[in-house]
Image 1 (cartoon, one colour):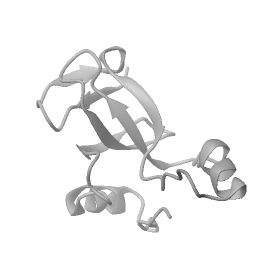
Image 2: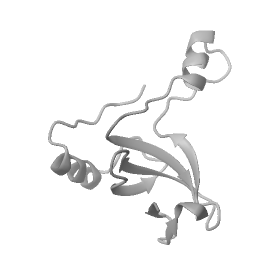
Image 3: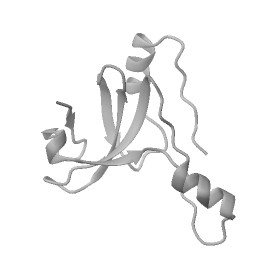
Length: 109
């Protein structure tokens, strides 16, 4: 079972106490965007074999949203961090690079 630490309240919670919200670091499109941009936002998602950044909600706890970096093959969690940050903290990037040397952070736009 997947266990994540909420970066806000510090509680270690099993995935049954959390709610997966999909891919993290997406550029949101609102009124005035083109149909292609909005379609891409709704339907085009990354599904990598390896490191993936996800948005979670601590639904049975503080109720706040946060991001988690984990490997989709091994379920290894590299860390969790605030959903308000634009990119993962450096310590999480370093942990990922130690396991996957060719990995590099790419900005989602």
